[in-house]
Image (cartoon, rainbow, N blue to C red; front, side):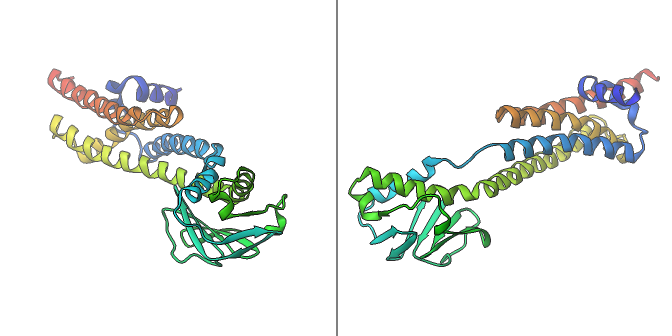
Amino acid sequence: MKILYRIMDIFCHPSRIVFYYKDKIYVLIIHLLAFAAMAVGVTAALSYTDYYISREDGEAFSKAIFESKQVAEIEYNDYKLSGEQATISAGVFRIYFNMEQPTTYSSSEFVVVLGQEKARGYSGTKLVYEMEYKNLSSNYSFKLSDLKSGKNEKEIEFVDFISVYLRGFEHEYATQTFLGGLRLILEFYGILLIAMFIFTYLINPTIKFEVRARLMIYDSLIFFFIFSLAFIFNVEFLEYLAFAIALFYSSITFRHIIRINKNGK
C-alpha cells in the first residue's frame, strides 16, 4: 500500500515527495528503473510494430532513373543482372548495380549491392542480408532504359524487384528508430537532471546533496510517463512538456521544504 501512495504522490502530489527523503537507495533505484523501463518499453514496442519501408521507396528509384539525363546499360533477366556498373540513391537508400560490395560504407544510408546473381544489404559495414535472385517468387525482366523510356509494365517489375531488397532492412530500420528514441530519452533526461539541480539549488541551497538527489529523482519520474505519451501519440510538444512539468514538480517539492522550515514544524 505504501508503494501505491508513493506512486500516487509521484504523479499527483509533488509536495509530498519530501516525505521520502530518507528512502533507501535501492528503493529509489527500483522506482527509477521502473519508470525508465516504461518509457524504453513504449519506445521499443512502437519501433518494432510499425512499418517503415513501402513500395513508394522503390518508386523513388524508378522516378530517379526516369528523370536522369543518362541511364546505364543494365539488364535483369532470368535471375541474372548484367551490364554496366552504376550507383543510384533515393532517400536513405543507395543501390549499387553490377557490383559485389559497396565502394563506400555509410552509417546514414541503407545500401543494396546488386551483383550478378545475388543481392547484399548493408547498414554501415554490417552485412544485414544476402539473397540470391533465384529465390525470388517471380522471374522479373527489365532494363533501366525501359524505365527511362516510360514503359509502365517494366517499371512495375523493377519496383517489385527493388522493393524486395529494400524491405530487407525493415528490422534494421526499426532498430535504428528504437536507438534514436532511446538516445532522445537519455539526452532529455540528462539535461533535465542538470537543470533540476541548478533550479532546486537556487530555490533552496541548504539541502544536502544526497537528500537533494533523492528528491530530484523522485520529481523527475513524471518525465518518463509524459515522454512515453509523446511517443505513443507522436506529439513532439509533449517531450518539452515532460521536461517542464518535472521542473515544476521540483519547484513545488523544494518550496515546500522552505515552507516547513519557516513554520518550524
